[in-house]
Length: 214
Image (cartoon, rainbow, N blue to C red; front, side, top):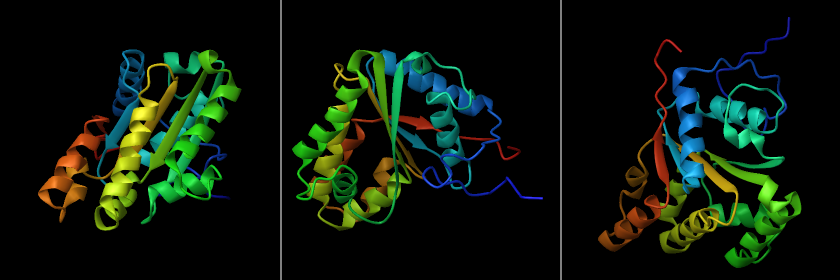
């Protein structure tokens, strides 16, 4: 018999998998908070949870609910006519380069990247559509940013959050990390940590705490 369960989920590899996800009060709370905050004007979210708590599986369940493949959660967000998830899985590397590669911008120009994102969003139909940018394992990009040109990398993350947070756009950014945003700034100068805190402030932090029994 073919096994359908895996202790590790990957939001790119497992996107089309038949997901046997059992929603928990914690997961339902997170969806409800994202929904409520989005309609109040908050569009960027940073989900914080320890290793092995099921954040990646949650993101897969959220995606399948968004695209109406599997009605796992209930949310007013799912009423949008067109919903486009765009997904990334973190690696120890540049988030700017990753976005440039995905959106076909060879010179890593942030303005061109945001232009490409907006073009996709515009083609969906704007007012009746929703774009959801999901970055799992976001902490790996943050670790790289802290040790490699933090000013450039942080500025792009800040620009990304500000682009998403524009109230004229129905765009949501959801990231996941294993520890608080500030924990990734270890080793930076005081001035750099101050900039790090500014970027952190662009995101609404949501804790993801599944009970050990789950």
